[in-house]
Image (cartoon, rainbow, N blue to C red):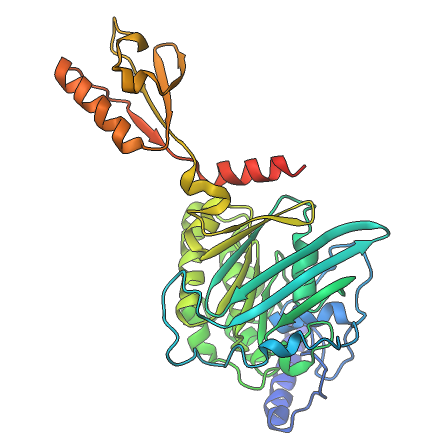
Length: 405
């Protein structure tokens, strides 16, 4: 173990010295991605590893379809539309805050299709993600989310359609473009015998303008664990390190793939604070998640993908017509009373009764509760289990994906 540790640290120090010496000389040729973990600078990399390398973590293909072949640049000029979309800093005069639509587009997708042996995994989708927002991409397993994200990251080639990410076609983009994106995969494997600080210092050397290591550690809440070895970190700490590795190159666009899977509630809340902080820094976040609460808490806009097609897009409050869906007012009738004793305006809305429990559907819950309140006050009775329930994001999501099967 001592020999292995010595070799690992010695190798790290050699690589760090080489990275520092060569940083100003642009040691990587144009179009060559930063090296993947565990490889020396300049080692030829497969295209499917290059995306993960931009995040500082190894990438394992999800399977299905060819990878590693760059599509030829498209002649229609679609990518050129957003060449000036994003600068390294937030644009002056751009209004801050969630829900702003005046920001320039960072991702533009038109008619994106991907087929595997005759199976259409992505069936002609359109997407637009604007600078400085958190965009949540939801969908059941097999809906085409991973394929879409891998195309946007430049890892997988598309069958048809136009894609522009940070003003370039990801399939043909080079090293400079890759330095502008960060990727947090579902699983990663940083060097176990390096400390968190050493690991970030190592990968900082692969980027032309990295963030300060100490600042990045502080941003993800790892300052107190900077000397902890990566292989001995808890699951939550490792996930924070994953985010730090994606941030060390100071990217403009960050892809987060299931960033809080396996977290306990406290760790998930902390991770959400970190992700929200990235938006405050002006970063654009493309988030995939199966946690509806996570999407509702973080996302400025949400798109739902089902069977390779986008079936709904909007804010958490309006997705799929959620803001106009009927609410359910429910309560238990006092002893000796039935739904027939309710005032006519309320009785007309009753849709279900069972075991003394009454449910009424309404698009004007405040008005209905007012009628119920006056009726109860006039009779001197209480309704302690009164509940008003509007459709949750999960309710809407399940309905949208169920209808698309």
